[in-house]
Every structure is written in structure tokens, then in C-alpha cells.
Image 1 (cartoon, rainbow over the protein chains, first blue to last red):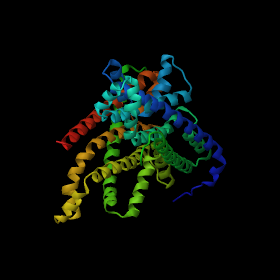
Image 2 (tube, chains in turn yellow, green; image 1 turned 90 degrees about the vertical axis):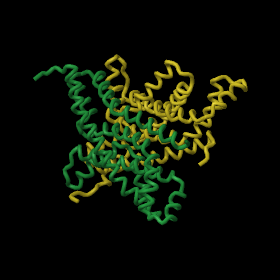
Image 3 (cartoon, rainbow over the protein chains, first blue to last red; image 1 turned 180 degrees about the vertical axis):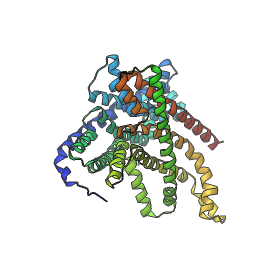
Image 4 (cartoon, rainbow over the protein chains, first blue to last red; image 1 turned 45 degrees about the horizontal axis):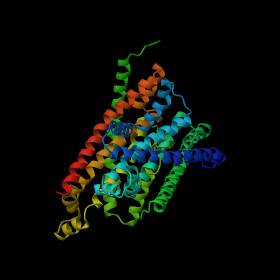
Length: 221
Length: 219
């Protein structure tokens, strides 16, 4: 050991960390809502009749799942303005995260629907429900119950991925950490503290989402 | 000196940098597997205390951003007075990250086997090692292979973050090329294509294995 750790000097920077944390929490909440909504929609499209649109959606899912999030982010932030599409760092970050979670959750929810017996569809239709009603009221709830833990894990993975949006100067938790380390040179200490914050964040997020699942989807466990 | 970049220059530079993406992925995956094996044995044989420590290890790497793990490896090792390159830091962080996921996948595959398999083998007089190697492992591998290949895709994508600590691989090359060509749309589309060409075959192979071994489950 040639050096000591200096955590005490970090205390004066807690307002910056708190502000960053708040932005990260907002990103996580909005992404979870937006991404899951897209996922439900996409799973409906992918589970329905085979059309050009469902194939296109399949292409979107594969494209997102097989490229790194950071490249998707750079493409949106640096590439799209080339086409005249300009947005703020925050909008771009949120867009990238929602698109990312949308693709993964499409695939997860679709897997839940796939194992649903075909008779469920027919039963819903025979009872006089429309296709959309059958999907929302009959097919979707048990499918979500089945895959809910996987869905929660994916939401957390995307939240953790938000650390990367610091690279396009969006001022979230990791950006705050980068800023503090450039001022104090206490790199290891800052990142250790922030890693701890992310850990607490991911544990809390899992608890909250699982509680929500128990309440609204009646998931046991 | 002003140089103009042709399309071919861009593609060639990306291909050259892509080799480092492939190499880092291989190192992380093989290193991760090597770290996982002893931990897996510990988890199978250890008591409650060891199990909790290993669960903590998994939670730590799965519950924090890979980017933070890279930063900690980069600055943490430097703190010990050892000069560390971006390559070493990235290999170290990605290896540990990979092992945390493989540990989960492989342990889950072993636990998915009926307990009677262990008991029957032990009753037949096989030792623990014999049971593990001759009875459990061959069956567990069939369960584990599809998700393991699927996870390899995550490793390849994870290597893109090494660009942030300055390691020149596919993504970093993309950023650098953008700075000289001012064509971010084209460059990042090509970078994405590069990752897609690496990852999509792995994804397809994982799905193929899943179908194959699932089908053979209920014959």
C-alpha cells in the first residue's frame, strides 16, 4: 500500500451526488414505464399474425439485442443529428434506454405468451371478447406472471446501463462521480461510493418492482 | 498533415480495432470460466457461510454497473502502486463480471437436476468427485450450454465499455474515426454492424441449442 483512502474529503460533495442520483432515479422510472409499454405492444405484435410489421419489429429486437448499448447511444446522440434530428442529451439518453428496454422486454413477454395454451385465445374469442380484449384480459396477465422476475432483472440491467449516458454529458450519477473525481483526484474513493449507491439502487428497485408485481399481478414469492 | 478517409479506410480501421474486441471477449470469457470453476466447487461443497459470501460476490457484480467495475479496476489497482494499462484493467473487470454470471448459470444448471441423481450415485458407491464428473456434469452441461452461449453475447457487448477507460477496440475506434471524418452516422452504423456480425451468430446458436436440448428433454 502506498496510499491511504480518503473518504472524509468526499463529504462536501454529497449535494452533487444526490443531484446525480435523482436524475438516475428519474431515468430509471421513465425507462421502466416506457420500455415495458413498448414491450407489451411489441409482444402483442410478435405473437399475432405474421405481417411485415411483426417481421420489422423482430428485426428491431434482434438489432438492439445484438449491439452494445453504448453504440446505440452514440448512434442516437452523434449519428442522428446528421439526419437533422436534434435533441438534448437527456432526451437522447432516455430515448436510447427506452428503445433498449423495449426490445428486451418484447422478447421476454413474448416468451411468456408463447407457452400460453392456444385454447385461451379461442376461449376469449368465444366469450365475445375482441382480439385486443382477449390479449389484455386473458393472455397478458398469466404471461406476465410467468416471466415477471426476468422482466424485473432486465429493468435493473437497463437502469445500471444508464451509467453509460454520462459519456454524452448527461448529468446523472456517474457524471457527478466523474466530475468529483476530476476535482478531488480521489478516483477510487468516488467510484467505490457510487458503486455502493448503484448497488443499493438495484436492490431497492428489485424490492419495489417485486412488491408491485405481488400487488397488481398477484405474483406469489 | 491532412489525410482524407475513404470508405475503405474507415472499414479497414474498424476491422483492425475489431480484433481487439474479439480478443478481449475471448480473454474475458475464458478467464471468467476459469474463475468460475473453483468458485462453483466451493459453492457445491461449502457450508452456509461460504454460500453467503459467494452470493454476495454475485450480487455485487450483477447489481452494479459494469462501467463502475471498470473504473474501480482501473483506479483501484493503480492505487496499489501498480501501473495498469486499460487492457489489463478491462480484462480484469470483465473476467470478474463474467464469472459472476457464469456462476449463476452453471450453479442453476446443476441444481436443476433431480436430487435423486446425487443420492443414487452416492448409494452406488461413487465418490463426490466421481458423481460430479461422471453423472452430474454431463447432464448439467446440456442444460447450461444454451444460456452460456447466450451470455457470451453479453460479454462481447460488455467489451464496448472498455472504450471508456481508453482501450482502443471497435467502439473507441468508432469515436476516433468520427472525430476525423465527421461522419458519425456512417461510422457508428458500421460499428453497430460489426457487433451485430459478432453477436447475432452467437444468439442464433444459443437459440438452436435451446431448442435442441429442450426437445430432447421430453422425447
